[in-house]
Amino acid sequence: MPEGDSPTVARRRVRLALREARERADLTQLQVADEMEWSLSKVIRIENGDVSISPNDLRPLLAYLGIKDKPTVAALVADARIARTRQRQVWYQKPEFRENLTDATRKLIEYENEAAQMRSYSVYYVPGPLQTPAYAAALMTRFEDELSESQRERRIEARRLRRESLLARAASGDVRILVMVDESVLRRTIGGPAVFAEQLRELLRLAETDAITIRMVPFSLDASVTNNASFDLLTLGEGEVLYRETGLGDEMIEDRDTTAKHRARYDKVWHEVADEAATITFVKSQIHSMEQAQ
Image (tube, rainbow, N blue to C red; front, side, top):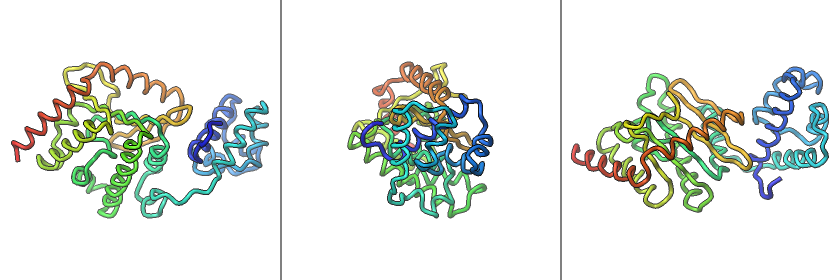
């Protein structure tokens, strides 16, 4: 067990080990629930990371799933203890945010606070934590028919808080942020020329101060990362998690094969697209165009 792990990382390690062991044993969640005399919902919540399993519950479960190696059992029990360490209530778990953010989004925010690296790919708009308040507000107007004014306000506030936390960690060297955006993201004037120019200037500032490393996928390059989804890959401890969203919803994926495929595709395209210098030159030209349009 790596020293200094947070409850978030420790809980993730336990639940992934349990899920993978159950799948290797070809057992369903219902079969596990019946054997342990638990409710099915308890098993689901443990595997989803919604609750932490106690060491007393973990030991017999590990035995049932065939995990008997003493060092492995000891490490997982130690992780279970760390996972149950009481933390101060974080802002995204407060009722006003729990009611207005999806489960996947709250899980993403939790992992953003622990990630050592974050690789972001966007096909439509500037990634959430990098958005200026005005850009975020303009983008949120597109959901007036789906979200109430209160819901939109909470989501805008959540983006502001995410931004503060993530960029503070980047400034201190705790996380490295790689951003890859489709050329359309740097052309789509969300909010109008003034708002969009401000957003582009902010991206330029972040890139020039090394808070982020940004590259653009130009229209001329025939290499798509995904067909229709933006995503974030976050490196946590020994593995990665994938947050993926489309216009219809979002999801958090922790399957190792899926995350590995997205990472391989991301790395491949990263080396084919416009580099940082060319991307910054393009951003500057777009800022000039927006200023001329005002």
